[in-house]
Image (cartoon, rainbow, N blue to C red; front, side):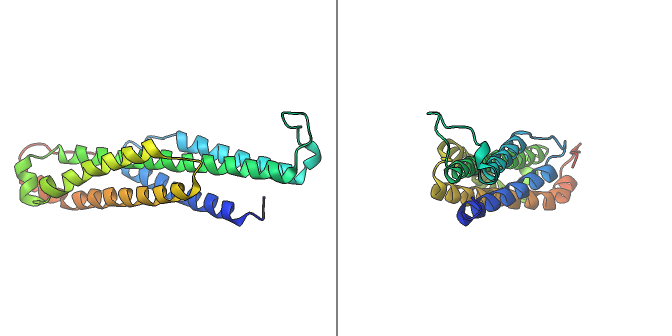
Length: 196
């Protein structure tokens, strides 16, 4: 269990990315709503790590397997670490789903406060480039969610990297819109108030 550095590297990498996503989601969410699914998955990740350690440290206390035979501590620990990694990935995808949804909602809410004419005058690329790209990102995220495979580590890492790129892109658009918002407000007649 403790010698399997590849599993530990994956768990640490996935955990750190999940943590970063949760922090981003908290920052972009004006209501500071709390989203529990990633934390439940992180709890389960830790539970399986502790079970693996228990199997190695207290092999004599392991329950028998389904056939009533004594379990091999190393096999038991490896199985628990695999389950731990599965929960870590689920926590990451739950977090990525949440933060990407929050970015898309915030972008829609913000831009919904302004007329197309005002938006075009400040951001000429919005209607022809940015808005269609955000829609494409939404479809790509849906495809990632549909095809995620917790059991395929190589594919999972590629999917995580792709998801990270999509979230980075959404974050870039959100930041771009936040920067031009004062100009949008100055050109738009009427009430454009929105909480940050």
